[in-house]
Amino acid sequence: MRRAALSRCADLAVAQEASYTETDPENRTHARALYFSLMAGTHEQAPSLATRQRLVHVQTDRALILHVAIYSPEQGLRELAQQRLEGDRCEGTREVIADLGLSDPIFNKLRSRVVLRRAIVTAACEIERALAADNADSALSWTDALERFVGDWPARWPLPHYVARVSGLLQQAWFKPPAPPLTPPPLQDTYFPPLRFNLPHSATHPT
Image (cartoon, rainbow, N blue to C red; front, side):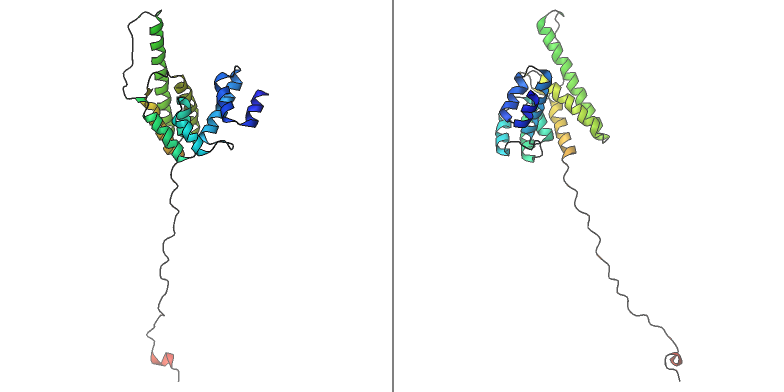
């Protein structure tokens, strides 16, 4: 019932709030999908482009920014989201490992971050592999996983640089510029001069 009401109203503010506060996991997942599609402009009742650009500019939900960068049909909005990802990335690849006991809560947090980073790297590599093999289904599946991993990434840490890289690759794959129309070659001059035969005079002027 709650899910049907969300779908009918397709209100951006309501979907956003429900995507974070809804207690039922299925309803929360549905609200989040609706919120993301409204922000990306893939929903038929999406707000105006200017409104969504303004919201993406101040957005802190990295998973949403990634989704918009990958799926928005509007190039300007994709570029804005991609700029947010490019400006919020960590170029370093060294993993942080603390020499602390397993019972130390700080160590557990760092260990969780390392595991999550590995998951992001794995998803990014699988997306690149799928794109190279022209396997759209696999690329979409791993893209969904990447969004979830990015959503779980701690807000105080810059994103691994793999996120912005694979986002750019996906945009290139999904939104290739149209190929120029094929034009037929110019018609050749098919005029042939009349044939001339060297016939004897008697053949052309019978007596």
